[in-house]
Length: 272
Ligand code: BTN
Image (tube, rainbow, N blue to C red; front, side):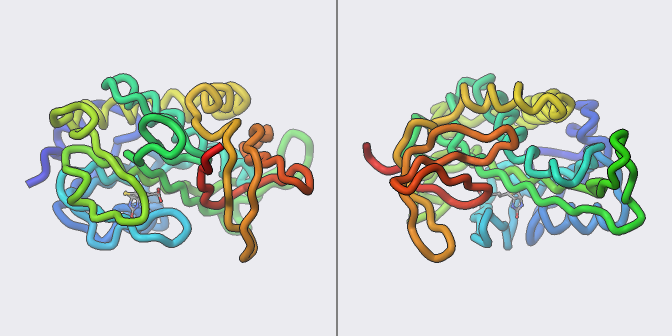
């Protein structure tokens, strides 16, 4: 039985957990949250599952989700234009990283939103998946500028936190992983961790209009900038120094052929 119950989560009184579902097993909280979002569930719907049998990671990868982890997806309906959807990616990374620091886990952000321990090349403790859907024609609206914009319909924000389990149980072979249990030397209180994540997410999401401030915090918490990295792009491999973020959060890579902006992808930190 899950350590987390719907009653306990609702008792947190978070505006991001107004509607809560807790499952023992689901294919993916991300899929369930998206189903609820399509059916019109409001902002602040949270789906948690003790186990996922078909957990999904970024870029079509699978995400191992045995018991002991915090596997959750949130339905958000931010009140801004669809062109700003990508902001949720870095915003969520900042929020979850701050929550982990509050329990004594010094997580660093690898672009765009992986949380690692001990800096570049360190083991991964948490993955974040933000998937958005812009509305159909009916949600076109006119901005103050007079321009027609497409309102963001919903974002499903998935957080996969390796919490109270041993890293070996995750059976990840292609990269180093860690868990809160390993980092803290004891199990974490999952309800308290969830409370901190929701509180920090609520704070950061409410200031997303001031994205430059969020990116400043992202820079302070990141372990990618200044590093030599490699990225797979359009079937080829690109190498360079991660210089900075653009105002919308793309990564600027200084390559031998000049600067390149990356909006999505998986980077590999290389030894300097
Ligand atoms: C990544 O680093 O690739 C992102 C991993 C996101 C995993 C979480 S676990 C909860 C939610 N449900 C899913 O199927 N995926 C996300």
